[in-house]
Image (cartoon, rainbow, N blue to C red; front, side, top):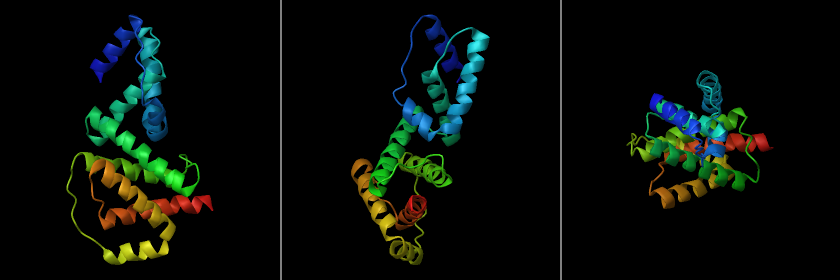
Length: 183
């Protein structure tokens, strides 16, 4: 990160501004990291007598996420797009705007971050299936389960990744919590 900050300061002094194409997603999906990055930008601006803006705060937040998830920047970009896609599917299927300030949304997004990381790092998870729990959740939360099946189809098509029944169970429970907030 020190190299990045040095480069950003030098670019700004040279009048070069780089736009962050994922700024909106970063602000929405990585709120805590973005808030800390804004404070960092303010400190950098004061100490270096420059004006780094919100785009740069987004880049710095990406570095924080990278450190948190121990992934490369390319992987973080993929993870961010993955989360955005899944949230869009859930939002559309729920016919609601997901309140990203809610605890249910925070938990869902956090789950999606680590789920996406497992997909993109090709981490093999233990294949321990609890068919009883899967069947109970499938029956009890049928609407949420339907939405999970749409997400599952999207992930299979776009990422060639098979979601286990246990992962589908977790997704269904998170979607059910969002559905309960709607009602």
